[in-house]
Image: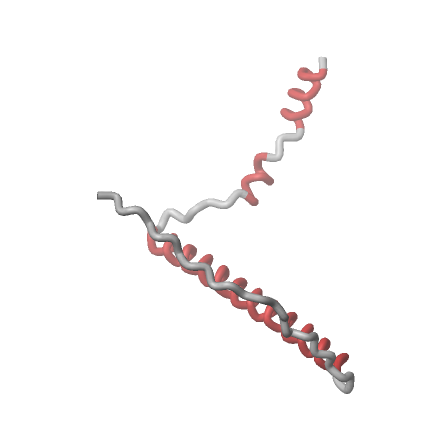
Length: 98
């Protein structure tokens, strides 16, 4: 029952004319194909550069904000001295495999 209803609705409301407007097709002319491909690569390069610039700007803004908020505060340097006893361990002699 539902399959018959679906087929009849699909036949009545077929949007193949509208669907054809939005399906991407490659142009037939080889020079135009190359031009569209180069345009796509240029768009990709522009988006990549914009992304890198925006990311770098965000990192720089975060670093500047952190430095601005820490100005005037004394820096506390953690103790980096490790007190320990060390012993040199010699490398064991490898057996000869002749």
